[in-house]
Image (tube, rainbow, N blue to C red; front, side, top):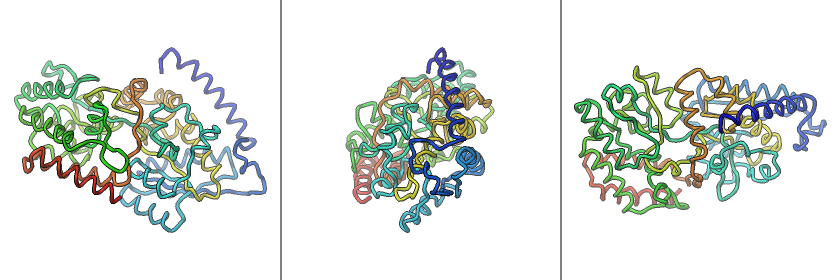
Length: 436
């Protein structure tokens, strides 16, 4: 949002928030008829998410704020680490007793929508009981399955090329910039390797990174998926592997053994943090965590290619159980978590940047970590450059991601040619998608 426009929007939003808070302290929202009935009595909603202790602390504080405004609504809170989260959620769903409200990501959104587990929110959005007008358009779109709103972004995140600014300054090298084409980027990376006498490779090899592949495809007008199949051909995949084969030959990337260290996505093993490469292909909100791992100053730009290939992605969503006894209240809780300024300030950036742009502007002003400030500024600057969101991935996406790492490593190590790796990936990925 343009800086000159912020103050007036903030004043208006603050006034509206105050008025709404006063209203809600004495009565229930008029649009949620079920809560207007005193005879309904106390309501206890179950809520489930994955994350660490900090996320739990902040989320529970936000929920307590909701209950302070709606004393008749309390929450049964359950949370755990990411490992085993979906196993537990799936077991609850199979037993017909999922939580009223739960956290989900784009690995499983389509599957849970197709299985009829989550509540269709479309009508609630249409009647403005659930307000998505403050979200970037592509972020709101990315909660839709088959044209229906099935979940709402709890926060926003996008892929980010994180690079070592200090290293580049030491060697009088230019920084990567938004909109660099891949060929230009690889040439730049080879120059970095040469300038450091091969001690630091210019870039990690991202051929195993599904995000990089997806954005590379979108820059060419294609998608990672088309329904329950891949949205590209074996020839496209061969060109992708050839691109990074040639980059390895030009010494723009490190050896396959070094590259493999980072393919898991583990932040602590990323080459920009371990000093083995000048850039890493990551999520933008991982910049602060990476910065803690190195004394050098890190920077952030988009992945190579046209910025319009990117979209405002939900780092995770809030979804409601289709069989909840209190759907209107669950929807109001989602609306509160996403759009309320005070709730947004409590939640901060733990899940990513606030989905609502006005709430985000308030949160940005409270940030003290310079890396998180840079991340927030980057995301905000991209709002008007994002392209339309793709359809969330189909069932089987998690298997495809794991398969890409395995097949890409065979190409990186030379155990398979680009064509052989491409053929194996396309065949096995389509089989996994078809089988669900």
